Every structure is written in structure tokens, then in C-alpha cells.
Length: 342
Image (cartoon, rainbow, N blue to C red; front, side):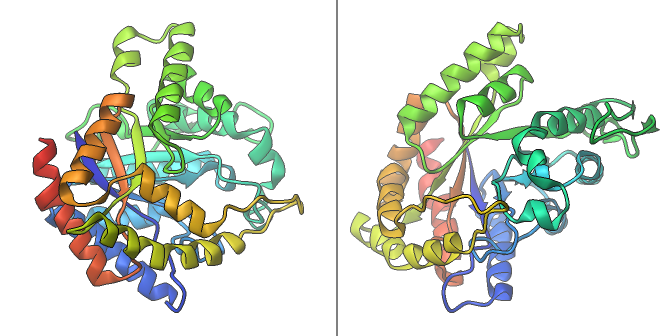
């Protein structure tokens, strides 16, 4: 089982953006110090829900600050960038880090980001599969030309080629964030593992993995690829000597952050949004994920793995909003939970 941290660079009420980003970088460094497997970096634009606007850029910094752990984007939002731009950045980090980058991509939402970056609502509603296919070609082929439409360009060489990595023969691992049957099918048909969100429980995640396997088999993906796909489950982790104390830490801090962060999202076309109740959502997360004593946290992770088949976890550890508490949380995850899983 491989356990890593999920870092949003969340800006809690009363905090500055620099404080949130410093905590994010320090969380990544402590992730390696604590003996964990990986760190996953989120990307958001124009909202305090997450103050990192470029997961791939922050990944570059973290790869430079660490030596062992894998660094993943969770996720790089594909509709707001050009696939070749993202592909070049991913290839560069793959080669220079010795293959430690995992590129997680996602569709994002119908946010004002699409207006600001000039890609438009079409990039979100219709062109996501086309963008993903172009990205994958860039990461796997020596030369690429645009297929037409939005991405019409003459053939150009891929520089640097991911295959030039001295310790890895293939390109960076790519995952797709999946929240719907359509996104599950898109990932499965391409043989790409899924990043499963923290808002759903084990039963729904197991159903999504079963659906992924059905679609992968239907298009003739190899059996070893279907059964061996290394999906990642996102969750929340807060450790304390008593479960009530761990839950209290999150219930005090997270609702304010969630309300402030989610309220700041603006749709590009004025469509109505349905907002989660911040307190109820925090309570849901405490019930779904490893929140409690080290033994409870280990049992919860083991149970999720058994029910779903997932063996990789990306755990949000900054739910307290406090740097010292976050560092302690990560260290306890490595020292007191991880040994019980191995």
C-alpha cells in the first residue's frame, strides 16, 4: 500500500495567501521526511479554496526540494491550458527528476477560468477528450501534428522526449480525475488509471472501478493492464489520540475554509450552482476517511483497500489550517499509521 499526502494550499479564514503556500511547500517536504510515498498537488484559479494556480509549476519546486517521493498533480486542469504546453512541462519534469512525476489531469468546472484563459466553454463541455488525446500523443510519440479544429498545427518534434529519461524508458504516469460515468469511460478506453475524489465512499469507488474495468475490457485493453491499473483514492486524514479530538480539529477549521473557498467560485455562463453545506460536508468527510487514532486510521485505509482494490492514497492532511498541526499530522501518519499497513 502506498500512502501520500494531498496538498491544496488551502487559505483558511484570517490567513494570507503566502502563508497557505508556505504551508503547502512545507507539507510536501515533511511528506518525504516522514517516509511517505508521494505528494499530490492541487490547482485552482482565483479562489481561496486553493491558492496554487499551477500544480505543474509547484511540482517543479517540490521535485527540486525532494529526492525520493513521487510528486503528482491532482490535478492539472486540461481545458484551461494547451495540451502541448502541459505536455512539454510534464516531459521536462519527468526527464530531469528521474521519472518521479505523475501527471494527474482533470476537466475542472464551468468556471470563469475558461473566460480568463480564452479557451471558452467548448473546451470544458466538448473538447476535453481531444485535449487528452493530444497530450497523450505528446508524451508517447517522437513527433506530433495537430489533429485539426482547435489544435491545428504542422508536425513538430517532441523536445524533450520523455523516453530520454535516464532512469525510465516510458513517459510520465498519467491519471484522470473521474467523477462521472463518462469520465470513467474516457479513462478506461485509454487505459489510464483514475484519481477518485474524497467526496465519495468505498461503495461508489468500487462501482467506478468495476465500470472502468468493463469499459477497458470492451475496447480490448490487455488483461494485465485492466487488473493492474493503479487507481488512486483521495481522502482526508487527521490523527489524534482520541477520535473525537481528531474530528473536532476538522470541524473547527474546515467549514470556514470550505464556505469561503467554495463561495468564491464563479461560473463562466451564469449557470446556477448547488453548494454543499460546509459543516455537513466536513462531517461526511470525517465519517468516510481516516480521522481518529492511528489504529483507526490504519483500519480505515485497509478497509478501503479491501473493498475497492485501491492500493494508493492521497490524503488531505492540512485540514487543521495550522502549519505546526499539519506537520505533526504528517509525521504521525508516517510513524504511527504507515507501519500498521505494511
